[in-house]
Amino acid sequence: MTRHRCNGPDCYKLLPEASLHGGRPRLYCSERCRSRHRRRSRGYDHLLKQREERTSSAAEERHRLRTAAYEVAREARRLAAVLDDEADRPRYEQPAWSDRWFGRPGPEAPYTRATLELVETVHQALAAAVAADRAAGRGWTEIGEALGVSADTAARRYRPADRH
Image 1 (cartoon, rainbow, N blue to C red):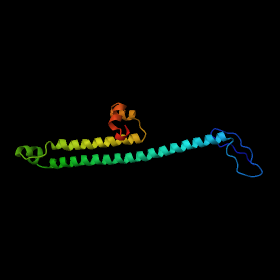
Image 2 (image 1 turned 180 degrees about the horizontal axis):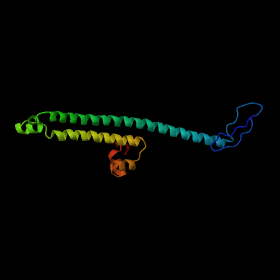
Image 3 (image 1 turned 90 degrees about the vertical axis):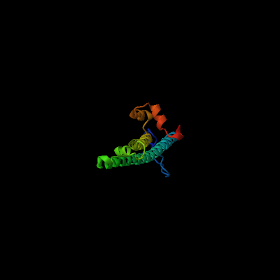
Image 4 (image 1 turned 30 degrees about the horizontal axis):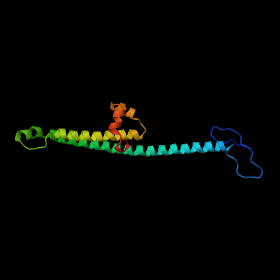
């Protein structure tokens, strides 16, 4: 019969040979080794569970970021399409020229308003990017450096309202 070693963490003791009367073979050299193995495996399971939660959370945040990025692209394309359409018109039909010249009422500062909508969408995408980085395990210091602000300022600006 071959002799086996203890399954306890960092324990390499040989286990006694199995008895001739049969029964279940021992896995650990002592109760202490068995307890240490259980504690370690329980901790490992807990770490795996945390990692799985963080991974699924990171995937959700990346999805939100991707959606926000598409929204930014859509807003930018819309603004560019309007500007392209205006550029293709004759000069006398340009909105900046015709609205003032003929006294037509129009929205105040339409280019500025359209660009502000784009900037607001970019801010939403930035918030989604920060949330994705946090879900991936990045710290506020790292995020603050990327934003050019302190870790405290980054946390104050972008920490979710329910987690202050």
